[in-house]
Image (cartoon, rainbow, N blue to C red):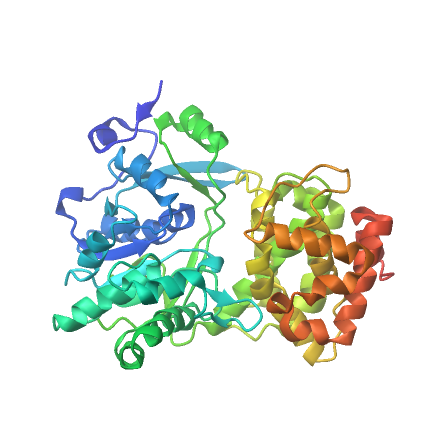
Length: 491
């Protein structure tokens, strides 16, 4: 017997903590683009904790989206009064709580309604969780791409834009014209300098419309940088069944995650902000050291284990960590090649941080999949792996492990595992990647011809040599034997 999640049924739910605040008393202060699992397990959870303290009730969330798939999320959440069940899982414990911080979700595609809400003086923060690939960044230069068709469309149809950046810009212009203070734009995505990247996207689009508008964006709108962290797998029927069986709650789109969470923010909010420091958010003058640590060590670590595990038909992340070869591969690449090029972080031991990451990856309750870690490598590799490899090249240092990570990605994109199982499409650029991988089977350098991904790294003789040797080994010896050779310093 399960209880359908809804506002009317909250009193009947005894297996999970429910909001201790009156949702009727909440008022909107934030519009958030990208109401996915990570947002609901992270930003929404921090706000829920603050609201439970009896504070910040004028900072409730209104959801927004720009993709067709966002409408499915909107409909499911609408049917349960915008409530979400968050299940936090560790190896020896599980707990559930229901968040109620979102009070509305604007219909995707209704540009006029979204812009009107952004122009509402009550909205003081606009936040985004739109994935690493959603910022129109050229992979090689890591700079905003003003020629992207979506951006060109918004520049030509500024009255009805389709991208999050077009909508944000239109909302800012409407506020400016009404004499209202700009809202703060806060990225919550895993991108180095995510505030700068977001500013470049909004100002870059503005420059296509009016250079003076771009100058106003840069001088008048705040884009704080931030580092976010919480492992949050995709929701499947598995998670819905676990929630129903263990907690008796029927939630159409619950979120499962680990207990650990972290949020480090620059305190740059001219229009005001909720007092999130009271619920564990770190406000610091410079987020960059924390970003580098997380993106290079944690996200880079995920990329390191993803492709060998995928090629060896390992399904779950914790199962990859149970494989001695994969776990040792992660440790060796991190300690010998990644951590040495990560700048120091205040009050943090990087080896202790790695140990924490290894423990988190090994959590058997999370159910995070290798396929999710392998997703969208064409956007993730240039952010998580290639920068470390380039740093190693510039320091004339060993990069055998990082070259092997790239070779494993190349081999994965061929589209079959070592056993011959088919790997289904797993990247927005899958057809291109598969074609290049097939060329690289005979000529490894063909993979590095993707200059938009590899940039200057593709010109480094040491990287080319190490990549070529690794890829040849993967094709002739297989993943298992190649990992063994690397671990024995024979690669």
